[in-house]
Length: 101
Image (cartoon, rainbow, N blue to C red; front, side, top):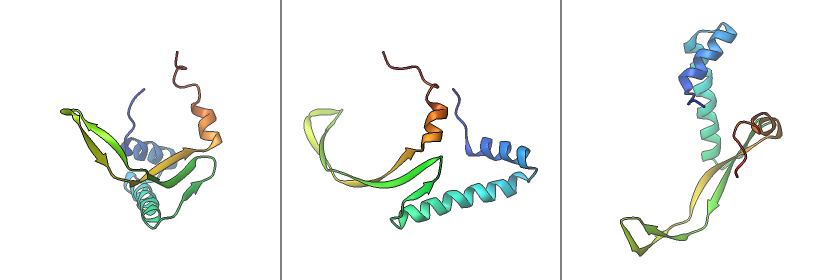
């Protein structure tokens, strides 16, 4: 498995569509900016057959500092972004990684 960057995606989409890389980058970056803006506004972003970006609040919990394991550290509650894959995406990637033993 390799790491795919935004630049890799832009180059692939540009070659597929015939658009310039700058045009594709503008669209991809615009989409990411809009998803970020909507999440920051408290909205849920749903992309049918791909997945859903949702905001979740974590509970406060007690953690440990690896440098000082005897001291407890309170980790406050916070808001996180959760991605829930859609069925089509899940079905396409289900065989990528081997099952745990």
